[in-house]
Image 1 (spheres, each protein chain N blue to C red):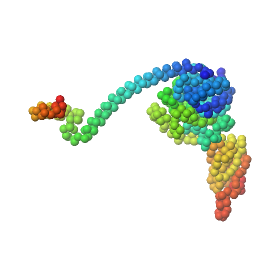
Image 2: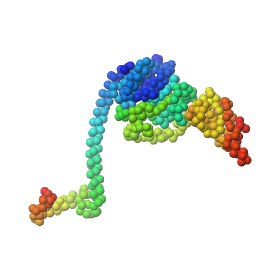
Image 3: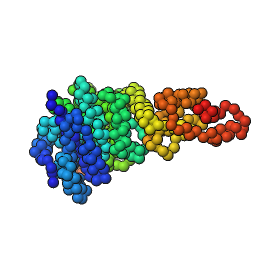
Image 4: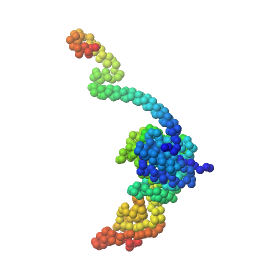
Length: 104
Length: 378
């Protein structure tokens, strides 16, 4: 049917196109991975900012979620440990499956 | 120096209704200035029996024909043409759609433009060449004729000659590229899939390498437009482009849209349109004569040059109608014959100004003065 044979040229270019396409897929996958990480990080920062905005200024949660206020965070953790260790909570946990799960 | 060799590629996808006319038109291309081979690149047209028919048609006429084993899409089919020209030692490659009619002297007009310093591509002028289109009321009705295309080309070439108009991007409906530029810039990017915007990307790549993107106003190729793309389902009947491909252009060339707007608002294009239309009607009037009439242009007698004067005689412009082209020309109401004749540099062949137009009758019956009666001046 063909009056001229371009199969060779076409095939050679198809192979080059394949290599180019493959290189682009690799490049785009790397960019996608990197951008996904950036997206997760940005979403976390956004959530933190929203949380900070919703907590009353000066309150314990406000101070806790402020990245630099490690002492306040540690104090809150200590309070939690004391609550968990209290006799009342431990006795209650014997009778409450839900409380046991919280303490676990 | 040996004569330049041109590979004239016509990309085909279906198009039984218009492809043979395009090939016949290409076979008429004048070979005085270059050796021209015509290559039909059939992108695996799915229409039953069409490829066999087209192959036989090409074989009978000594046209190179190649059908790809599977559909490549426009960008890769165009690239195949560019690579074939490169590998087979041609000096220039022309990439063309298949819904076109070429003037016989096309190459004599395109080559001198392509040979100018720094030119990377030359797009022919047309009725349908994106924003550069010569405005016409109905090109398919008034311009789709080989004789008309030849005549328009000669007329425009007589005025614009080898002029090269720098444009923001080339259009591959009929574009000539020197092979050295293909070597340097490369071929079409296959990321444009089945097509649209690939030539914009290519020409902007050529621009980045320092080449000029030019339009040859001294040429005219009739382009029906979107024939193959509609057939291929690349664009829907009401769409003119592919949004996904435009998004790629926007991403790669964020300034491109502003550059196009800047070009449009520069006035260069409007001036070129005005000059072209003026040249067309002047040439036609010189060759075929013209008539003077009153009223608004109608669609009758588009094969003649008709100059329409305002019925009340107070408008200082007249409208010229010819084959779907319309242009307002300067006109002095106090010297109708003189001003029109000086524009066309000849007297009208027929004055068909009806003395009893409604406006004149109305003025006379009401006793008003001031409504001019053209015959009294002519």
